[in-house]
Image (tube, rainbow, N blue to C red; front, side, top):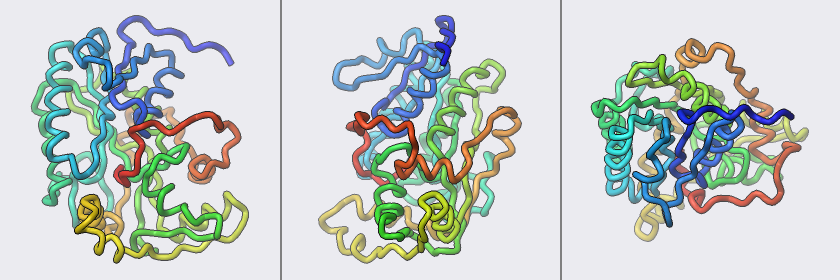
Length: 313
């Protein structure tokens, strides 16, 4: 394999949250594309010093659901302030929370942000702050994550946890279509749009490549990957209900339960227009990597400290 071509100084990216699931994939993708990658360390780095000279800031800072209302506005203001002063472009991993319950099945960048629940409102207000800031911002919106290693998301922690027994445990109705995005594809989209940022407006909202499948279709795809039958069964929510008095996270998981019952898919047309040569990973290949069946897994790779169970996107 040839060494990646090093870009000039204006191809320097700062990754906030580089040990989390999205940040880890973003750092890997930018490094593979030849960018100078700065990985922010909360324990020792100062945001202003770390960001100065970076042309792109990828904001993968993540907080537990229980801390969103307190932490997300603070993170947002800090990143906007430094990006406005330095002239950097900000890339945000976007989720589907902004749309709210009752949204249309096909979600586009023009779908109104009508969420009324607390977590949805935090995301709506966060994106509105970036849009009003004048800082060039690229939102890359994804469905539930499929990662290349266990990182405490819905797929590896719940859905595929009993795959060795031939069971997919699903949090919603088994016949409702649900969107998933493979994190390497999301990260490669970040790189592709970062490299053409000078042609983009101050606000760009793009759906990442995704798969829209039901639980039954997901089980069938996993059966193809592992070569043995897989059946889907419903996740039992009642323990989450009972845990609310002693587990603050439970209330937020129940708050977002509607996404598993609401059919939805991500419209790919905007992504195809901006990155016409992009080739998304096929579903079976993404699942093969998500369950650890890929051949290029690094057995010494450890999960970052930001990847503790949150079950959020």
